[in-house]
Each structure stands twice: as C-alpha cells, then as structure tokens.
Length: 254
Image 1 (cartoon, rainbow, N blue to C red):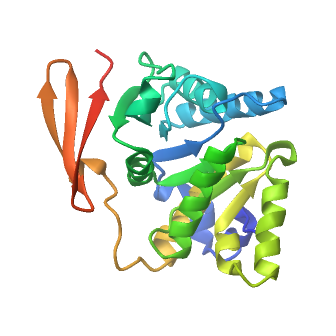
Image 2 (image 1 turned 45 degrees about the vertical axis):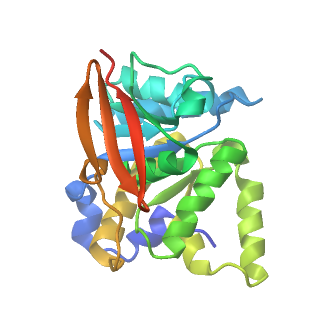
C-alpha cells in the first residue's frame, strides 16, 4: 500500500495541518522522459507542474536537455520564474540540446555524479512518466530511502495511470517478501499535477519534524563538497567523491 497525503496528514498535529508551509521546500528534483511519449496529455501535465513550481518560487533541478517531458517541465518552470539547474554528464552534453538561456548547466564526469548532485540539491523528488532512465533514477532514491540515507519525500506522478504497472510490480515484490511496506508508504502517488506540491509540502513537514535523522546524511548543499574556481566565463567545480577526484564545468549562461 502506497502512502498518500491523507495518510500523513492524519498523523500530524492540527497546527501542522493548518500551517504546512512553515518548513518550505526550496528545491525539487524532477525525473522524466527525454521523449514526449505517445500521450500528449503527459506533456500538458509536465508543463502544468513546471508552471506550479515556478509560481511557487521553488528551484528546479533535473537531468538537463530541452527535449521530452523533462525539457517541457523545465521550460515551463523557467517561464514562471523558477531557477533551473540542469545537470548532465559530459558525453550527454555533447549529444543533446542544452537550454542555456533558461538553465544553469552543470556538466559532470559521469552518470553517478549526475545523480549524486541532483540528490544533494533536492529537498524532494518527483517522477514524471519516462523510460528506463527515469525508472532507474526513481528506484535509486527509493533504495537510498529504504537504506536510511534520507527522509526526502518522493512523489510518483501517476498521470492517466502511467505508473500503475510499476506500482503493481512493487506491490508484487512486497507480496513475495522482497520489499518492505515501509518504503511503499514513503512513496506518495499523485494522479494530477495540481496535487503534487501540496503533497510534497506535507511530506517534507512530516519527514523533518517526525522522522528520525539517519546517522550519516549526505551534504544538502553541493557547494559544501566542492571548490569553485573561476576560469574565463565558466565556473569549474573541483572536489572528491569516494576518494576519486572529479571536475565539473558549470555554464552560468553568460
């Protein structure tokens, strides 16, 4: 059984229900397909979510690129005033169209660092419809939560039943004894773009005020883990991850 905003709200004191914005989400990480898919309603829902994120003054971090649902969401957020951060590995930066005019672009060495920085920036996660890459990103943040690495809210945007087969699979894994119900309840399921931000806000209030913090928590701000060095019109982020030196090129849109 998956969680819902009502499940969490039922356990909150009255003040937290009446004033859910006391602990605010500052940055949302959105996973989504690099293609539009066959159902045009998915693109409309992705754009509506982007508009809501921008109108709420929330920063958006995503996997970079102008194409597909993730590009639609990022463009919509930027048009409503959201700060947009696009994070992509070097080999993808060379292949895809990067929205330099609307986003600060961070180019990283590999997919692992891409996901780590997206995680470090984010206060919460949303999974739009997408392909195998979106599934992998969603599964990883679910796994990290299961292992106690974070308490950040996760919303599965089940627009028009897109994620229903995935949810059925997770329930099957639980029935088979390979997945605990706790992680399923931690994943909120939204049927519309309008439901996502209120659901995330209630989720983060619940997580920060009532869940115990893990013993080892990754840095919330990537600037804590890197040193920024100005080079011409680029900012080079140099640091270490698991004792391996990395270098990221940040296109600041100049």
